[in-house]
Image (cartoon, rainbow, N blue to C red; front, side, top):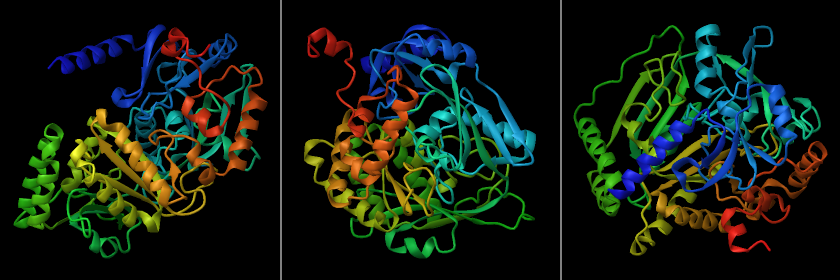
Length: 489
């Protein structure tokens, strides 16, 4: 009860602080990482350039990242999402959109849909993120061109003197900067590819992993989730696939479940509610679902005007749900700590089964995964050097736990990396560190450091201690606790 009251007081205090400069808290999503900072809100690009010259700074979007990559102690934080860089314009000749640093994904999607009947190539499912913040940390959806930064054709940032620098696709530095996790900032403007809005055939199923290849055959985009405490040899999965659709077909409503499907829907609905509040019953409940061996499949035609990357037959935004049977699976994104990383696509089933076994062995220590293990497939390759799928098709593995258990997720990540050296980070969700250097390419990381030093010779742009460890550029900045305790002397 006391904890709930404190969280509500924190939420209200943060809400009151929106739009205000001065001392403010910067927190990661779910508040595992946080720091008190001096906040500045740039009204326009000119004022932002002046603020940069005042001293050490960092840039923060909507602070959606879980891993604290946006939490940087001891420097002024430019709160870009709350600023006035709200420009949006569409070029019908190149079919690209120009967007400013304060624009959210929701605003951009709405503008493209309502004004030009177009959409983004792909996106994540949290619509309040700033577009630029989302792209800088590697936000992705699933299916073709899944990594959002892969759609950038031009970007403009301010250097350490507050001067504009513009890079276009094909420029030598572009592939490093397009996805640069806070080392090049502020990025004030992007030009992105767009695509026409179109319907898809959306099929969501409840089945077994042994049926995965069969069920996703012919799909253009695949997202699946595993119940981690079901049979480790053939776990229960929830599968969502998209396929191309005849544009003459209109959107349909979600079909009503019947028979065993009706039972599956009832069981899952009540499971989602219990999972959040009774973690010690997660394994027992999932074992019961495994024993029931439920099957269900639902097919709909999506509405082209839907804003959500999860694709719904009704237009608009349904932020915490997927189509019908899988809609409850993604509520964990908003109630638990989320750690994610990428593994080669063909290794995803084996990695998931490995995680299931390791997590089950930790039950006696009180640790339980929350809800599901989510897998989003990235079936092609992307242009930015630090994109997850820069070299080969990959799968995004998302793990969830109660916030107090986030360190167990970091342990599971390290265990996976011992056996799969091609594991690559999600810059807003992974436990970042030097262990990712080999997979990302030390030469490319060193080149990014040189680009940073070239454009910020003043040393005024600072980035996360986790990124500093990844780039091997020295000790982290001292936070208040380190300074007050004398640890930095």
